[in-house]
Length: 296
Image (tube, rainbow, N blue to C red):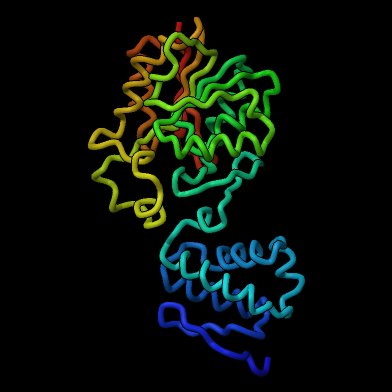
């Protein structure tokens, strides 16, 4: 390739700063991310670079020898350093895809997970007129439901006003803000006097004792109040199982996401609380991910 120009260092690693091709830049980035312990180093390097260039990943493969401008490289190095510190890719990019929609994400909200799409599917299957999304975070569940059910009205609660700001921005972005009411408060508290066809929630379900078993991207960067429960991982499921029926129409549904190995216990909670037609819904890997039940 000839002269690569000046060099810079990232965490003691040398990276060329001018006159470097896309393919070599990705290779260098992937190597650094792999050394930092990132699970998908090449994919992340490609996504970081594609976003900076304003192109899709296919463009990178179609133009491997294209040289990258020095101004882009400076920002690339900053973003690469952030990813090497195990900051989630979605926070660096400021966005994440969920249920075919792109959402703004910040460190004030959890990064939307593919497995949570099972919860959206469960809600959509009931064709509800009204839905409450408890602990809305980025708003991904509420917004995905509203975007796919043109007549539905959604109420979305969160204890964090910072999270609600992100959710409102996302609702405006997808043209559903007029059908979602965002309310600040703990769990069901903001919904006094209201009843719904479906109540859906992806509550915290990781015991504090499990914190160190999580990837650094999760335990060190995502909002802890949205992840951890204290020592009882089902404390929020217990509360919702006991209290949600006060906010459901007759025959309404409660649907909750659960963690690995929690589905049977949560199903029992619903049955003991008087719910019928209790079912466990699996994600694409066969893991029980959502528990739903109908109240009388």
